[in-house]
Length: 596
Image (cartoon, helix red, strand yellow):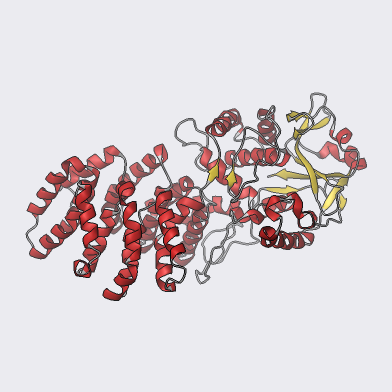
């Protein structure tokens, strides 16, 4: 679905298929991509001929990935596909860095598949300079046992011509951590290969950090508290990085607090860049909640900490922050099983119209118990609950499943059973439920169904068809939440004042965000012939300041009469309503939206 009236100039592409903000790369900030644009660009960014526009696109995609709007799985696949064709060394180097961060968010077969493909690419890329730095970056990114064994064989036989002596030394340190039972042999063998006195000194200094003996590593870390033991700063940074290696995270969390406590002294006694390198080596590999708590506690205990050093800590801890804040999901194994079972039923419909998939998804979820208020939690986070539902969450779940099946670039070659992974379903739900897909407290959730529809429209997911079905203008005002704060625990009292003010500003924006239309109850008979199975039915509210009171998914019965599937409070479960739509809606009216 086009998102622009014309293709951005300089891209070398034709046809309006996407929005590409910041084409010249001069803007600063996070540019949120509409969902359809993001998905299209994931598959087509290598075709952008202008180097600046191509790199700006990559930065936008990376920022959208970091914001949780693109899954690690889709982003890593896109990067690898682009790397295969990339000839610019600087762009390829950035892609390699992006891939490393995305791989941190992968596990199981997804990570193994990416590692295997990266291994192949590092050995076969047509551009030798790119092949060289890919090969040299492999040791720090591989976790698959078979590939680590292959790295060991390369080191032992020194069979990679693109590796220098320093590369083999770095590989030896990585292998000593990955194979602790062979560490003595690895380090002794690599030392015997060195002849240059300076390289021998460097080797002996850093090798202490890969010692399998935990007590020896603790002693080494304590020695770094003395300035005289930090004189050669690049070596010291390497030592600290190996001490905090990802494979040793559980035993190195205890280094974080003393390492941060000494950061001001590191600044006083070292080079101008040393504090940044120290903080990066100390925190860059950590992802655990315990590590994040250590950083938070330090910052809380030091409210007047120097701003520049504080920023260096925050920058170094960014991946740690993401691992413990932006990916929090409240769900259960049963939810993922329900998802898998439902998607298996829908998979044969992947090439069918969206309305067909929506209807089938709703039918598959019939019988799900009704329960309201399942999203209410503090602090706000993504809740994925397919065991129970209310009316809007049913529509949302069916929409997410439909989107995952339609135009999914990886659907045909997914591992395992072929359905998109549950993590992608969670990401899609977040992009539907929250403003711009970003969770930022209670007000960031799209509480009014009208805003949910508007965001989905702007993202190219659906269009509202109420007017073309004969709808008339609707004078809609939004004020219910801000004028009934006591109905919402998150808005009550002094603690809820700030959130209530944000809700009020949202209401003011929605008042003029669109020209709303609805089909009056008495006109449903005239419109129903053009309402399609799978259309989203929104029943308007008679309560002042409230837009929608109930939602469902249109479904015709065997006799052709129009009904709808909904999470029914009266029935206590999801059902196909026995009454026809016009029998159900005797007052007020409806709004209708249709997925593309």
